[in-house]
Length: 521
Image 1: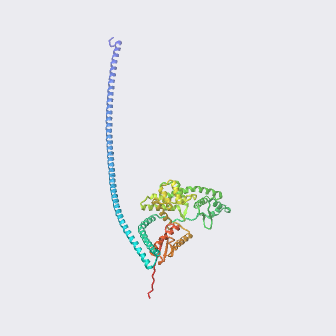
Image 2: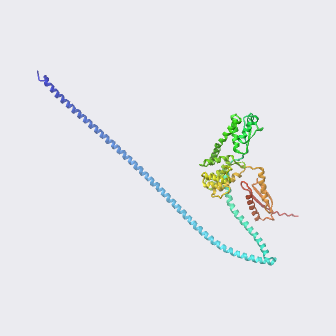
Image 3: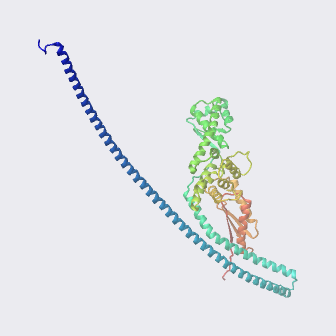
């Protein structure tokens, strides 16, 4: 048996050879694993380095962009601030220039006033000398009158005072006429232009309300159903609404008559609903009238909102809107008060625009000027003052409150808005077709005008023309002079203002004519 074939020897040899081979394989694997780990670490390090460089590059770019943006914002802020400082400096220079001009004008005005004061002193001295001379002349005249006419001092004084009175009245009349003519030549032209522009820019419709409402019927058969058995339906309807139902020969129509416009509107709406429903009996009539009466508050609020929208008014108190809605059912000389308020609002805004004032505030004052007419009769006082108190409680500005309170001159005006409201109120009330009056009222106004004209001495004839808008007075030329005619016109106008109530204005014309007739033979 050879050595290699001996199992005792071959076993350890194989074990050693296997161990060496395993150890070598383990070292080779470990070396490969270490190389792979080193390669992975190197790769990871390179990736981390590249990412760090990328992040650093992006951060640097972002920082540069932010720095550029901050720089641009700073430059823009500096340029804006520089522009603002330049504008402020320019405004200061302009203001300084304006102040210098105002100071210069004040100095010139002071110099002019000083010159006028000196001139007035000189004229006062001259007037004093003239007065002394006039007194001396009057004294001499009195002595001459006493010597020539053989009058005592009392009689001469009476005659002289009468002459002086006539001369003073003549001078005062001439001076008054000259001053008023100069004022009218400027004021009337501007007022006429402003009012004409406002009237032309606002074209309002004519307003005429009646005391009855007509409800159309689909057929004549409904008249019998409205009347009911033995008239019970019509009696129940009249009792529930408070209006009178007139069923006459008018085809397919029923007339509702009543002086209260709210009740008439409730009756009209109730009648229309009953006709559409078809069930007409006393119980149904009471139900419909009750429901329509409850809905009237919403209708009133809607009318108020529509009026505010038409007038172009901003925020307003809800209670004020409800009061405006109530004006839809009130009338003044057959003119609807709410339509009148809307018209006055537009006219006041137009007048304010022509004068360079706040048109929105003017329209607000014009819309609310008759708000006191919507207040119950339980509150006593003129409607202007009542409306002003209501608006003050509801938070309106003092400017609006004063304009409402003063539009009938019951309190002093604190600004131009009250005067504009008064003017617009007169324009709206006096335009043709705005209001109607009965024949009795018209005849009485014309008779009162002629009576006032004939009550003055020296008046020969008196005529009221143009529907009572003008009073023409013919005076006796031998009793009234030209200066006295002018004074008579003013006295007539003052008496008409104090005794009569009328919308708009009345023109007074005094005519004095001298006719000289001769015959050639």
